[in-house]
Length: 137
Length: 295
Image (cartoon, rainbow over all chains, first blue to last red; front, side, top):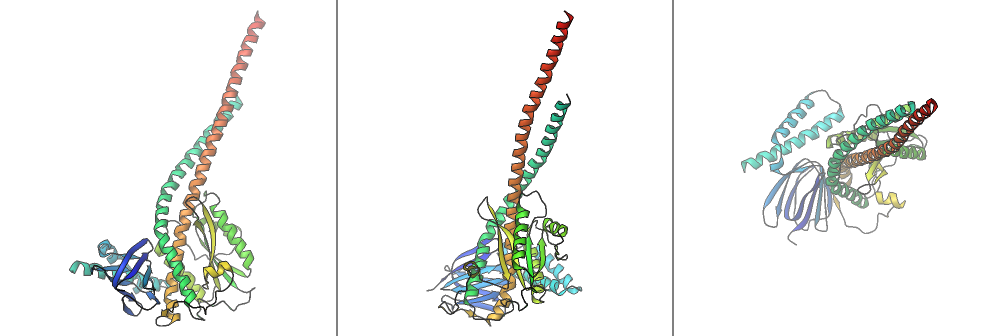
């Protein structure tokens, strides 16, 4: 048992399907590492970066939106609203989204809109971070 | 002669209408292609989302979390929220009527007080003419469903639920049953209920052996974090599903209309030719009768 089957499903389709040796996901209270044979669990995920190592020892990264991770019987299912590879991220769009969200957060807005804007800002930041990491490496 | 002109005018007017329905058919076909693609892409996500929630609900220890608790208001007093997904435009066959009919059935069945949340202009217009009170601040278009719309709708509704403005929430939407067939579906979103339990009408016992899941840090915290996301994923997926059904239904309606126009034109052309022949025959008879009289 040195790998576990993983599915990453985003709202526009199956993002990743394969066997992984190592997986690091952004949970609500910090990053969480998952190795084969992990305990059964259901957790919420927050906007951020997932890192995963496949059976050929190659590491991949992706920016994800909010969602849920479930691990059962050595099988992992991640359901998120968005998932993007670094090369698919439109950095300009993310920068614009960040600026817009930050500007809106400065203004007087309803609590509901505040929450939405915070979520938008978190998504933009995750994308920008991943895109920058990708360029440096 | 008057009859001839009348028929000619009718043929012209039907031809005009046919041009419009033909153009609308083309537009709906193009839109349907896009809608079907995003619907197919979304299908995996939608079913994974539903399975995950089923699993979560099945493994959850007894909980009194607000998202799971049934309101303690009496039956007559209860405020039922209905999220009805209609189209922005009409001329889509029975698409809008089916949704409205199903919503009305549900409202009659549930009783109590109703709060309507309507997506799409057609549904809003219908409620206004029938004096069904709707939430006027809830203004969303059914055109081009996006995550943004899904998020806005779900946070709006969850806020109302948490403030006890509504005691439960049902969603009424149209799903594609197969590639060509659509079907109206009703689902209770809040408080959360298991779809399997709702279908068989009884509770699955919680104490049978299942995998032991950890809910970190606590089950309630997990629900707090997962449910809003589940809601917006669910609403987003139903918007996509409905939009696809809407375009499909409009395409079929326009095709039927164009076909009907063609057959009407055919019938009228036969009538026209017959009438024209009649006029000619009559003229010949008159001329020859006149000539005979002269001899």
